[in-house]
Length: 331
Ligand SMILES: NC(=O)c1ccc[n+]([C@@H]2O[C@H](COP(=O)([O-])OP(=O)(O)OC[C@H]3O[C@@H](n4cnc5c(N)ncnc54)[C@H](OP(=O)(O)O)[C@@H]3O)[C@@H](O)[C@H]2O)c1
Image 1 (cartoon, rainbow, N blue to C red):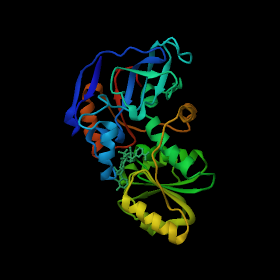
Image 2: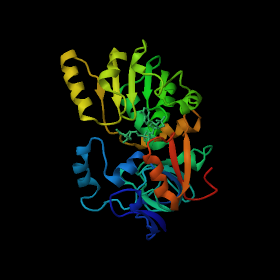
Image 3: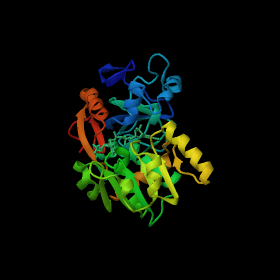
């Protein structure tokens, strides 16, 4: 089968479009023909071994492979169709259209993938395209983890999403609206209309205005891209408010611990989102009823995946970048 091979760490040039044997499912696995997948920030981090914080590079090597990558095919999320089912798998049958999240086990940048029947794979909602199905789980899972699990967002909360136009941000805007919050999206001029389309009540253009200078105070501030400053943002955070960051910065964590001790309140909540089947079912349900959707910036064929990585690493994509493996059947 064709796949994008990740044999060394480095810039997108290390990725090779090549052939590897088609996998064969074990008794407890399903073989899935991948229709579409994405290039996410996680794929970029692991390919280049560049992490925030920088010191994470050393423990990361232990997991991702000391000298050469442990995962020779990247790709954290996909949609596709079940082609073969192991004899112990009872919840899928040949021909089922599915959405899957190998997450940090990767493997979706290929024509086929084998996963256990009880892994994070669910039926694809029939009314959404394979492109849409491939590109919601990474960003939506992460923002669900921060907004619902870490901050317990609720109806009426005033929520500010910083970096609202990215993968995490576009889902954060929609999920916060779904939970009944009043949403302020911070993005650049080019993305203002898109944020309104996603349901944001207020949009602030970070190129023209500093959101920390407004009089408004927020229950939750969620920095999806690690570009807002915790110390400045605190000025517009309510006394019992929560500051979330998807991006680890030691300076912010240190600042938060110190102010948390001295002011007796918790300001910064960081963490690593973990995908679960239960959450994927919940999010697929939101996709099915149109409560959330994936914003797709660009699509590429599998052989141009390195080009897709280059684009993602420019840091200005809108929502998601999709790799279409089965051309013509993904829309
Ligand atoms: N903790 C976790 O579990 C977890 C999970 C997933 C990802 N992450 C981390 O979350 C971060 C974001 O991931 P992502 O996939 O959402 O990134 P992304 O989609 O690549 O983010 C791109 C977006 O960031 C916006 N942006 C860039 N500079 C900005 C600035 N100064 N102010 C406001 N917006 C700015 C861009 O908008 P403009 O073009 O308008 O600038 C663009 O739309 C990554 O660092 C990733 O490693 C953490």
